[in-house]
Length: 437
Image (cartoon, helix red, strand yellow):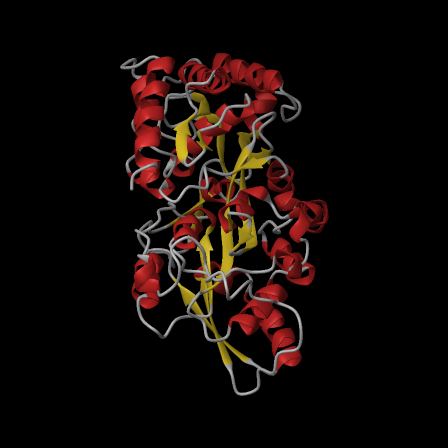
């Protein structure tokens, strides 16, 4: 969740030694996560991201203990860094000594699924698979088959200044979009003497936010028609949502229209803002910052808005869901054992531990209990019930890499293009990219 998601170029199927459009060859079938497997003398190698080591290592250890008791197999967990994990994975998958289980960010999975990097799994073998969060599970599916298991999520929410709300006479978090814009108007009026004040801080290239507004009006980014992808931003529904976001940004935000959201929590922490739309963890980032921003071990120090923030779901706006999934590599020599470890690590018991540590569980039917067990994640848990995911296309990462949506948004906000012209241009660029051979 706490990273800029970017997917490295997918490995060719010939490099992976598997078929080009699925995790396993058709005659091999799906890997089972049930049944008795004698794992004595075997070791399952697991690659998890460093978040698991720092935030919920006890959950990892408990799942591993239960897995070993059931199978006799040992587990070697290697914790990876977000900065280089894809480069390392590409190099590793090209060889023969591969990890059995790999964690990837939810938007990172698609290319590896399409290039054949992961084995097919039996969806029904995993707890709560009927209610997996769509924003996570969407990346796991191809042609009706499943190649990964949702692990944990993080939702975007409205984060706001309680002191400024109180000063403006706003007594509670907005429950409708009309309430939200009315609150923004009051904040804008009450802080008109601050030329830097953003009633709603919204960076101009924040495409996750803009597309959430598109989704709120029933719009889409792209869809597949036959064997071709077609851009959908020019549809009336998409343009309606895009226009709503543009109006909001122009009216209430002083954020740089050429910047993305990566630095928004730190800028908001400077005090000239009433509301921003961010991952739930960004509330903490706005309230405390590192004494030395370049040293991740540097002590945290409070900002001027420490203790003055609260969070709530953004009313009527679907939340883009970040998070991670787990898959069994196609080259694994321990596929069934690997699937069984994932089963233990993503069952209800493990999900309860993740929720207590501050992560969202992987299924909608677990969200209410998670919010009760850990009230700090309640706003994100509510937001996650209405989540979305980018088009599950093999080339989607290339759309992100080319900054097509970001360019469109800046062009619209600067007046270079109208909403209609910007949407038409983006549709053409998206279709060309997604359909590229």
